[in-house]
Length: 330
Image: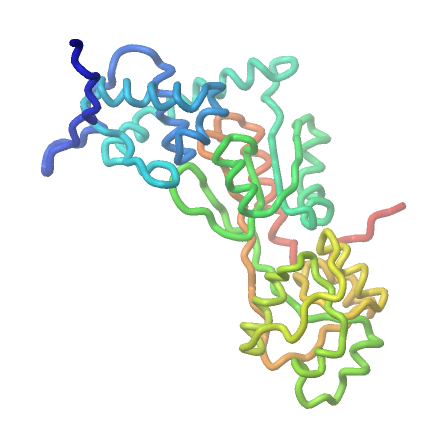
C-alpha cells in the first residue's frame, strides 16, 4: 500500500529567530512570487485567482509550493480569506517593488502606441459628474486614458482588492494590506427641504416630531444616511420610512427641490440649490454628522505613471470640493 500524501504544513518560524522573510529568495518560477503578492494584497486565494488568470486551486497549489521552498507558512487560513504571517510580510517587503516594476513595463508595452495602459477609476454615482470628471478632464485632454465605473463603497473595495480598479473614491477607510488610502474631504450631512415645506415647519416646538407629517425622500429603503443623521442630531430613529426612494442622491436633491418633501443629503450636492433658494436647510439642535471621502489606490498601481497623475489631480481638486460647482452649459 502506498503511503497517504502528507498534509503537514511548512514549519513556522521559531521564536526569537531571524526574520524568515529576509532569507534568500527561492530559486525557480517567478510566477510563484507574483501569485504570492496577489494573495498578500487581495487577502484571499479566491480574490487573487481572477487577477492572475488562474483557478483558485492553482493559486492554492502555487502558494503551497512556495511555502515548501521557503520552509515557512506564509498565510494563516481564516473563515474569510487569509492572514499574512511574519514571513509573508518580510517576503512582500522584498519582492513588491521589483515585481511592480516588471508589471509597469508590461502595462506600458500593452498600451496603444507604447503609452501606459488606461487608468481604471470608480466612485459612487453622485460623485461622477460633479466631482470626479472635472478633476480628471484636463488629464484626458493631455492624452491620459481613463475607464470609469460606479458602485457603493463595499463593492468598490472588494473590486479594488480583486484588481478590477486602480483607484476608487469610498466613504470609509479600508483596513488590511493591499490598499492605500488618502483622505479627500469631509462631507457634512444637511437636513433640507423646499421653501414651501420649510415655512410650514417654522415655529414648531419639536422639528423631529413635526417631520412625521412631511414626506421623506431617500436613495435607499434602508436610508442609512437618514438614520445616522437622526442618531447624531436627535438621538433617536427616524419617525417614518421613506415616502419616495430614487436611484441616486442627485435624484433626491431634484425631487425635494420640486416639493416632494425633505431629505438628508451631503452639503456638496445641494450648495447651488441652497445658494439660489431652491432648497432651505432646516434648523437643527446641533450640526449634522461628517462623512470623510477617501481616495483608495490598489497596491502596485504606482507602476503605471498615469495612475499617479490621476490620483494627484483628484487630491488637488478635492481642496475645492466644498465650494459650489459652476453650472454645466447646455
